[in-house]
Structures are given as structure tokens and as C-alpha cells.
Length: 233
Image 1 (cartoon, helix red, strand yellow):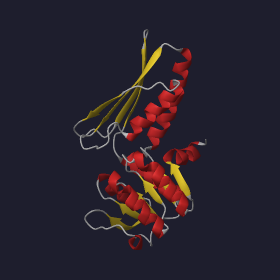
Image 2 (image 1 turned 180 degrees about the horizontal axis):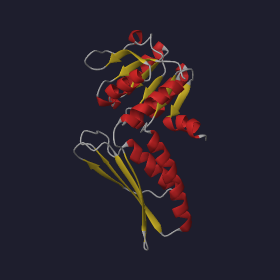
Image 3 (image 1 turned 90 degrees about the vertical axis):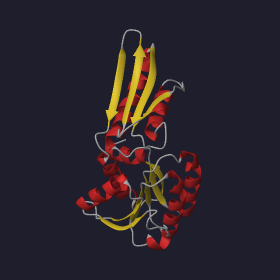
Image 4 (image 1 turned 30 degrees about the vertical axis):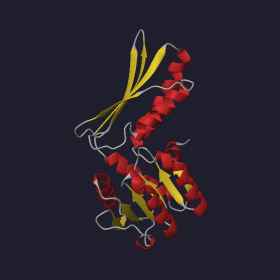
């Protein structure tokens, strides 16, 4: 059994609350909870932590990274919508010798789904005559559109089809937790692959898995690196 972790939660919305619940059930301790209501997030407030988990907002990621690096605390970033700053964050983490895991989606099921989609796209490109398409749905409050997961799926399929780009159909409505569909349409038939999240628990479980994995490591890693170790390559 992995050793219990002392965790700092950066952001305490729905995902942060769920991470806290699952962490307690797994025997971990939430040492500090930092958000807009009880901030600011400073290195001094992080020093008793083994790892930090960030489910806040994209605009805060670089500030949180700086605080964690100053405190010598590795970080798991589940926040999306900050890919345009990834290169700068990577440089900062590597220069400081810190540790960080980031991802568009921390759901273990989604990452298995991505592997299935990638393999399917390769097969359909080989046989020819099929056009790929992608649809994604999320709740009305989700800020980024397309979602980070949709962009990952689009890249996987595009790479399999020789760099061919295609649009992602986006829906934001109600309380949809997250649905992604990848299809391959041909004249004789259509093949549709889908992943539907029933709850956000899978994302929280993946974030805790990443938190255990990054402790003791240096460097910046996508969540795919964690899953590659779990799935064996």
C-alpha cells in the first residue's frame, strides 16, 4: 500500500471537494485547503505538504506552480484551459527541479478510451473510405470549448489520418458531466465510439493516482505518463 499523503488542495469547488472526500477514504490527509475565500496561496502555507492538487481556474495555474516550486512541493494540475502557457510552465518546472503532472482529463476510463480511439483511427485510415468526426458535450458551466479531452482525441485521430484536421462539434448545456463521441463515417456504414462520464469520481481518482506517482519524481509529465506505467507501455 502506498504511504498516506499530506495533500494541499488548491481550489475547493466540486472537484476539489470530491478529491478531499476520496483522499480521506484512502487514508490521506488534507493538510491545507486554499482557494479565493482563504488565500493567498503562498510557499509558507505549503511546506508541510507532500503534494498539491489543483482544480482551480486556468488563470491561477502559473501562480500555483510558482508557489509549489518555492515550497519544494510537487503539483498535480487538473485545471484545463491553460495549454497556451504550458511551454512557460515546463521551462519553469524543469529549471527549478520540481515535479508536475498535468492533464486534460484524469479519468482512467478516458485514457483507455483514447487508446481504443487511436488504434481504431489507425485501422480506418489504412482501409480508406472513412471520414472521422468528433462530438463532445459538457455542462453549461464548463469554460473551455472544445474541452481539453476533445482536443487530445482530435489530435490522436488527426495524426492517424496523416495530419488531416477536422472540426469538433461542441455542446454546453445543463449538467452534462462529460460525453465524447468519435465516429468514422463511410458510404456503407458508420462506426461510433463513445465515452460517457457518469460522475466526476473517476477524475478525482485519477488525480489522487497522479499525486501518489509524482511524489519523489522531478520533471513535468502528462497524465498519459502515469497511465502508461499503469497499463504497461
